[in-house]
Length: 625
Image (cartoon, rainbow, N blue to C red; front, side):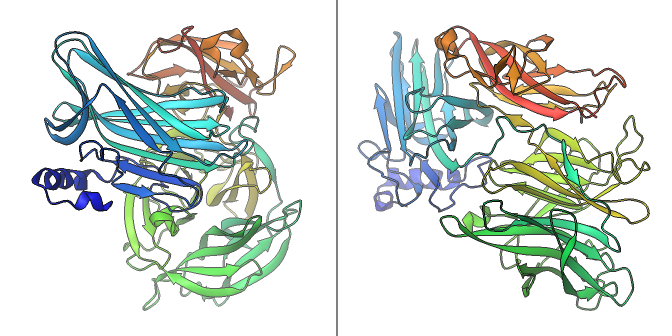
C-alpha cells in the first residue's frame, strides 16, 4: 500500500479499516493481481481527499506501465468522508436544481497490433431516487475498431449501494482504456462512487472469429490397441508445423504391470512409453487425467511439462500424486497433493492454471461429485468449489482450462437422456471468475465407440490453443464397454465475433434434433428493450459477400457492430427475460438432416444507448446433434 495511506489521522484510520474489507473484488478475473508483462491490476478506495484521492491502494503492474498516464479526472464532484455505509467516496451532491458531473478515468496500456484487451472494472454505486449514474467505456475508434462490452452484474450490498461489474474485449487493443461516468441529480439527492477495481489483460487471439462450431469433429484415430486409456494432454514441438504429441495415460491390463504414460503422434501411433511407478495394486484406477504446463523461456521459446494424476491411497501410506515428465518422457520429481479430500475410488480430472495463486500456477482437480479443488505448485490445497450443471450430480473425470478467456471445461460420464438414449460423453463450460456454469454445453463425437452408449464413456480431456494459429481444440479420450479407447479432437469455442453489445450464450443443454429445451441467450445489455435472434448456416459468407461484415457505413449507431453470421432464419423478437437478459427458444426439426450441421446465432438489438437505436451482439456457434 502507498505510504500516504499510513498517515495517522482518525479519518484515514477509519477509511483504511473499511478499505481493508474491500480489497478483494467480487468475482474477479482469474488473473487478478497476477504480476506479468500483460496484466494490470489496480484498486482505488478513494480513502483520501484531493489531491490524493486517486492514489491506488493496490497496484500490480508490468514494467511498461506508467502511473503518470493512469489518472482520474473528476468534474463537479465532491469528496465525502461518508455516504451511509461507505467511507471515502466521490459524489455529486444535489442543491435542488438539475446538476451534472463526470468522472473520466484513463488506464495505461501497452498496445499490440491485432491482440485483444480483456478489460474488466468493478465499482460500488450509490444512486438516490432523484438522480442517475452511468458508466461507459469511451468509444475511441481511432484506437480500436470493435468491442464486446457486457454489464456482468449489479449486486446490492446494503446501505443503498450496489456493486456494478463490466467486462469488455477490445480489438485491436488500444493504447489505453478510458471509462466515463456520468452523474445527474435533479433535487437534493446524492450520487456516489466508491471502491474502483480495474483489471486488464492482453491476449493474442485465435481464429475464434471464423473458427469452426463448438463440438465439430476434428478427426479421430482408430482404437489404441492393448491399452485402457484414461487421460490426455497435448504438447507441441518446435518448427513451423508445431507437431503435436498426445500424452495418454493408461490403466494396466495385468495385475503386476505398471501404469503407463504413452506418447501418441498425430496419426494415432504410439511413439513413446514412460512406465509410471504404480500398478493396479497401488492405484487400482490407473493413471488418470493429464495436464500440461507451458513455460515461456524467451520470446518464441517454450518448455513444457506433463503431469498425470495417480491416486495411490488404497496402498498403505499412499497419496494422490502428480507424476511429472519432460517432453522426452523422462520422469521428474512428482508433486504430492497434500490434504486431498478423503474421496478414494473416484476418477479425477486435472487441469493447469498458469494464473493461479497470483501467477505462480496451480493445479485444478475435479471429482465425480462436481467438486473442484485447487492445489499450489507444491501440492497444498488452496480452495474448493462446487460446480452445478444441467445434469444433476454430474462429475468430471476429464477437465480442461482455457487461460485465454478464463473458462473451465468438464467432460462427464454421468448419463443424460437424449433422443439417442443415455449419453455419457457430456461437456460443460463454467467461468473461472465465479465458478458458475455458463450454460454452454457440447457432446463428444457420437460416431465413435459403438452404439451403446452412443459415443462411448467420457474419460480424459484437455483444452488447448494451437501454437501459431491460436485455434481452440478439445482433446478427448473415450472408452467403449469392451475397454477399447479412442482419441479424438473437437473444435470450438461457442462464442465468437467482436461486436458491440452483450455476450451470446446457450441454455437447456445441447441442441438435439427434435429437442425442445435448447435456447440461445444474451446477457449484459441493460439498456436493450427488444432483441431479434437470427440463425445462420454460415459464418464466412452471406448474400455473396464475406463475413464478418463491418456495419459502420450504416450510421453512427453501427460503428462498433459487425455482422458475424448469415441472416438465414429469423427466430423472432423478444423482450428482456430479466434486466439486461434475453432468452430465445430454438426448436430443431426431428431427424431433418441437421445432425452435425453447424448453426450460428446472432442478436440484433433495439438499444436506447445507441444513437440509431440498433446494434448487433456477439455471436455463437455450435453443431446440431
